[in-house]
Length: 293
Figure (tube, rainbow, N blue to C red):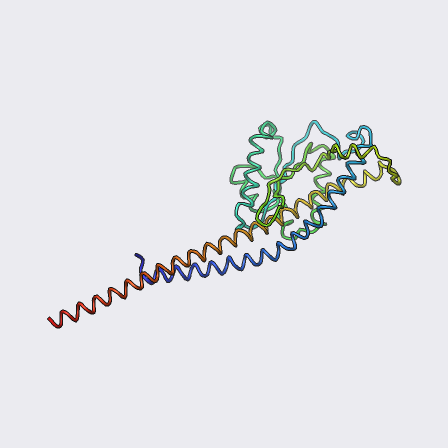
């Protein structure tokens, strides 16, 4: 059994750890509330914007030839944008994204990756480090977006993606990120950013008689870049809310585990202390008997 000094040292260490994890839990909880509000606000906007763009596109003949945002290029690379976190201590939040990218490279995009037609871009130091550790080449990183995820900063990056897609450098752009479900649940999602697609509901809505000014083509041309930027910004906000939720949950579990471990150590300390007292009493009694004898 460990001596009293060693157990006291472990107790103090666990207490310090519990204070840290508890503080991190409260910080994440405060950030999580704002991030959750941001997600709740942007989801209806992005959903409606995509509906409008899809409706307008469905009403235009040969949409792929007329608008580059819907064009399906036969050449060019596939750009995969992996979004995670700059910081750790969030459970499997970032590693899940790395695992999903790895799966996509080996399964869904295996032929393209083998041909060198898949380019990786990372947003988050943790996902960058994870991909590099698996021997994947990261063409570019936009880690600074997570430090200050302003709409303008995200829109500028989205503009770069759009320009490279329009020039045919990329034939497809996909996002891999954690979609926010609730504080304890994040769902790894794959979303195609470009080319834009038209759903069956949008195609059906296109046959309704709407009055659009000045005309469908001009409105659609103005909305396509806005839709792409909004989808990327929405994915960033989803990922941030998921990150804070994952870290809050991880720190809550760590605090609970520290409390449980502290109880076990305290019990061990009491047993050791009781044993030490018993030994001292035995020594005293034995010494007294020796003197009397």
